[in-house]
Length: 527
Image 1 (cartoon, one colour):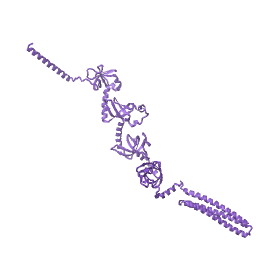
Image 2: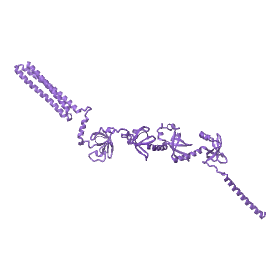
Image 3: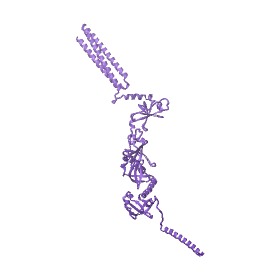
Image 4: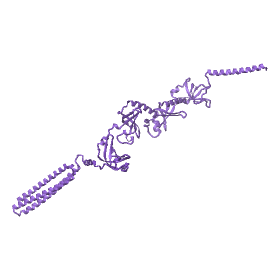
């Protein structure tokens, strides 16, 4: 090989290399012009493909690889009738790459996983927008309800079930509580999305709260203070009860539930109870509605307080001790305050120095405040002379019967009547003795002359009559004096009636005595 041949060989080699490089560039350009690439699918990708064939066992889908991907036939049973009908050859579908290459070298695809990916995207959008999602309860477990969000299984914990639905709980087991709700429509809100853990938490309560807020805004526009509405009790708390009015909740504070003192709303209300409420306040900025039940009822305090007045003495039972005083229950419906300054004449620091809970004491009413519904009581003024006249009048009124006849007067009349009857009986006995003596005198006078006998007999009769009158008058006067001394000025009229009875009795005695004497004289004269 000469130098020229060697040089030519070298040139040919360089030309061959350049030609080869040009051929490679031409291939790259050709590949770029045909938009063909060897972008192999990766696990977890969502790709667009075209259905190549459909059978009961599988669906072949072309996604731009050297061989078609396979969708197992078992997925067909999980699709809706409408979705299965849309699977025809030549249609474009979205698929999820389950495995780029199985053990058999097959590209495995899934329609359901692709739809789930769309649903995960939708769930994230719902989480961000806080919008509600309408679905149906598809099942349950021991912790709550299962609700489908597209092809995803969302979980509603029991704590996130709406209050209205929880009110319909029946039984203690999940089967008893939840089974009857399967198939019911439900509106939920997405509150947690975790794709990696395939965790989708949704809430009916949050969605209901959003709905209530919307309803409340609408309701607030048409409400006015002073209106009366019907509602239903939805929940009870220590501070009051929540009442639903046309979908919006209002609060009935504990003090607005009843005129009576209660410690918890459950004493008079229960969840689900229908009640009439009065709208007493509306805060449109804070979207709060204040309600009252008691303002639709008559205030019983007016009737209660009619029984009491300032200065009246009452019996009370100590119910509570506080630093500023003691509370005393004076009847089933009323409780009054004994301020610490009204407990004793000496200075005390705390009511427990004087009283204990459950002590029963006599108290005096010193203040009645109808507007503030308060009664002021005093322990140290029980013996106050300031109220002596009132105490006396009250003491008398307490012993007055329904007809207004005083018991003291009745007793005085009964005593006077008994004493008068006793005096009359004594007078009769005296008269009988006098008559007996007169008869003896007459018998003795028979032995004397007629004139002497008559004069002496007449004198003795007159003397006997005078003695009888004196005895009767003394007896009557003593009885009347005793009655008058014991009776008060309030029963003067009754005493006067008693005196009239006594006078009539005396008159009758006197008349009887005169008749007896006359008969004796007449008999003596005849003899």
